Length: 79
Picture 1: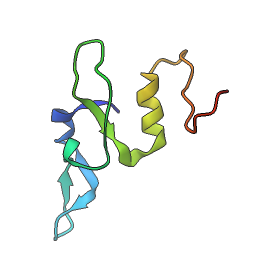
Picture 2 (picture 1 turned 135 degrees about the horizontal axis):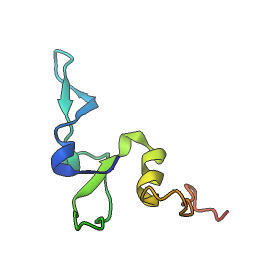
Picture 3 (picture 1 turned 180 degrees about the vertical axis):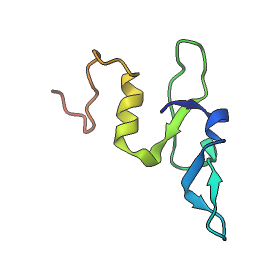
Picture 4 (picture 1 turned 90 degrees about the vertical axis):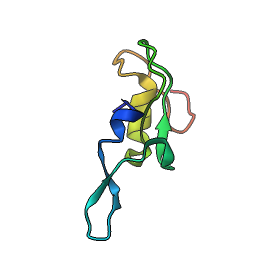
């Protein structure tokens, strides 16, 4: 799910925990897993997503949610 970084910082991260095993909030661009996306049509330029979701989130972000658009290949292969 693409989010502005300011909104993502209020989501819990399943990888960050306190000493007493409580979850911490997302670090956004301060995290190695944060992936930036291109600016959308409304001009919001700080959109991104958590890379911990892996290739599924990356492909969804690249396709822009358009069901008719050709899906990008994960391994650089042409279909």
